[in-house]
Image 1 (cartoon, rainbow, N blue to C red):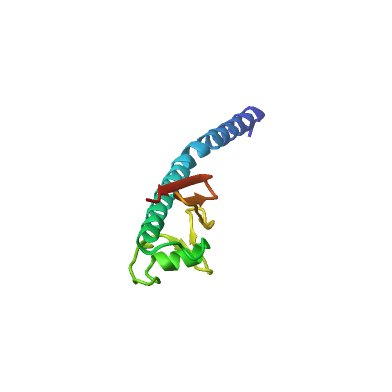
Image 2 (image 1 turned 90 degrees about the vertical axis):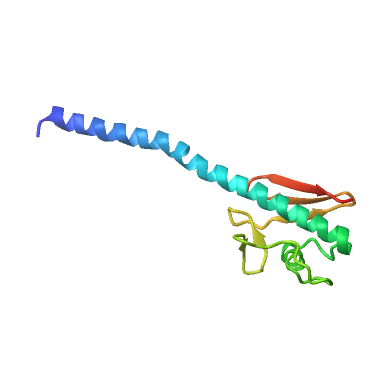
Length: 129
């Protein structure tokens, strides 16, 4: 095989590699965008569910993830379900996880319930009345 043909084949291979390298971020971006949207939706649902619990039954005994999830899923004085896990993920400690597998954090103050997704740096809140 001549040197010109070898050079041409190498040039083609390098060109294809560059095209793949340029396309990968654009192809993976919709996936991360959908995970971020999912985290927003879950965090908002959790904030609203937690707010509803507080307004109906009073203060949460803790803001620890697994305990809050058990309370919202019906382990409360009224046995009412405020949050349905659906396709949500739980870890071995029964903490609800964001789409990247990190536990959401819960924060409650006098006026708001705030849910944080550490993977995406987002927070959703619901005002307590």
